[in-house]
Image (cartoon, helix red, strand yellow):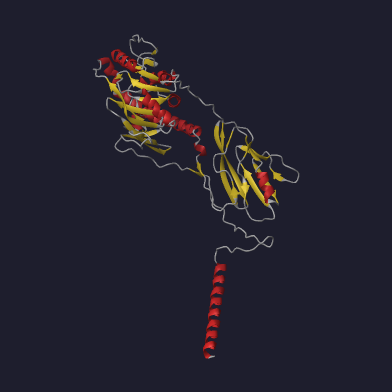
Length: 482
């Protein structure tokens, strides 16, 4: 009896202690900020606690910090002091317009808030200008409410719900701000599935932002307004002759040019050759399937490149200098095979006389007042998958296969008449996907430059100063270093 009584006493004490601990814990739990899941009087479903409205943007990208170029001089030092103020104003206005054309005003960061009951298209919703389009994926997912109400607003268009029936509560049809309410979640989502957007401005490439809200929740999603573009395709035909045109810029060196043409005809007797010639006293260049374009004297390398590329009717062109020479291992088909296997590529460079000149452009955007900084370094980015000896780069040697349509978009600046090559890749930075490959070889003829040619090949200091002033304005650069 004594033992049984003592056991019963211990059980009672232990039970009382556990109950006290449980009660204290519940009191403490109820006083914290963590929500308690309670049962609704309507359907006993758990309620979703209200969260504070998050700051989800849009956040405008701030003006970047000034950039720096090590061991080089600012580009504006080549600008005349008398012209500096006026040039700065013109440059600032042109840069402002460039920002608009490139869509920088829509360059915002949008964050998706956690635990939102709103479903919406985060990206990829595209409409054509001034055409009514259903907004995909809109829905509300929440617990029982007496009334459900959502609202949307836009800036560059109007909203409307298609086929609204009697009793369906929609306010703001064909306006920038629209709200929908219903006592049925199913009916609300049905109305959202019929919601349309129509842009009220005509623009071929812009963006609107839609603000979608429910109670204290709000999300923002982009609406891309784009005019559909028509594909520009080149019929590749059946062989390399219908795929590639060989382009040459000629100046004074006709002996070397004829050696080049003869070497091309050894392996490619039918391929088209286009020669852009700005020699001082032009000579005839004859041969089958050769187009010889005579330019005004000494118009320059890039003007000649533009002329030559403008006459290409094939999918690709092969750029060669007038003093190159085709070797037995110079195979245009190797270039084409790479470009066809990787259709994203725009330029593939090779080797000239064993020299595989290749570079990377390190670009800092800088701030809007001073401009950016570019430094050219001898380096590649990463291997081109599937092709040994091929690497992504920003610029390559002056022997490359170019995708005609892509290179035309960038073009060659005819202001640059004498020494210019890197500048084409500067203009194409971020627009052209470039690679370099070992084993794609062409020869370089040995010759001595004439006095006339040398005087054009090595321009005076005034040309360099004009060139740097040009980069300062055109590329919005603070400095450029080769």
